[in-house]
Length: 405
Image 1 (cartoon, rainbow, N blue to C red):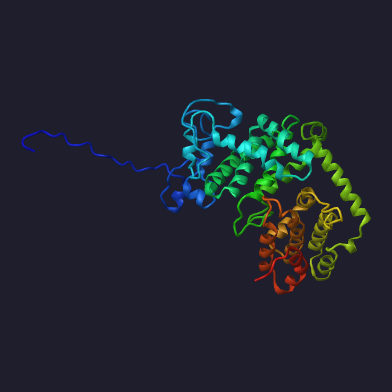
Image 2: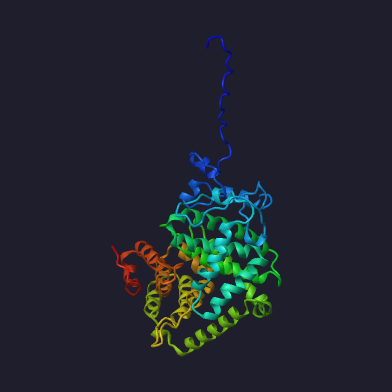
């Protein structure tokens, strides 16, 4: 222009990213590369492979780390503070940009102690144990703290829908990291770490039932076998037998002592009751008369005998319910793996037995972490049964209050 030498402006370059997550690459969609879980994976409720990269990251408090600083690490520093009081949803990137204290982790821990722990048991002493003793274990074992934060995040996601994505993503992240750590410890279980592994398995049970359900969820089994969470819980059951003295004399001692008393009560009620008086009696007769395979019949009858332990505490007294969550899940812990395999194969008899379990499961519906599971499962079972076997489950359907459409 008019002889003036004008230096051409620097041309902006656009680098094509090659660092998107493998899930987005396989689906051939654009990945926003948000850490620790991209938006697409959060939206579809799948574990982003960035999570696994985060586990192997550098220092948690370092600039290059992809893992949020956990409160037990005590890293303190400056940096902008995210506004957790705002109603505007925040991304994980906003939270992790804070150098030093991770306020999201602190928020989750505070919510667990002041709120979530109170929802895990009805007995005041057990509430105190979940509120005080379990977090103390979290400061000793990183995977326990991860389990605490994961469950608390699901709790907040349920009651703060405007930040649901944030909390659910954080719950998945914390649980996946804790699960990897606990699985590694399982291979080297000893008297020192057995208490931490045991309570993590209990937290995993709560986490599993509290995680938002998908239409195909069947709780105990998947398409390829027993559900991963159930394998973990059943896999840690041997700890009680091999490390009984340590567990009963440790910080979880009151939990095991209360559990022993409850087990003695169930055995007493079983001895005083007759199998013929149980709601399971009619189902037992139907299976005995119509199932041709003698080996399968033995498996089904064994499952029904185990389920009686949950049913002996089913009726309510004038003082109110006489059950605890352990009374319901005792069947899950004790049922034979061969029955679970038949349930995975969706045999008609196994599905009918499972429908009776849904009746006792319905008693936990008042807990936020269990709400809706009984009706979800009975609906799935009904649609998997033929017309003959649908008649077998009329009693469970009526007790649950579900109406077939």
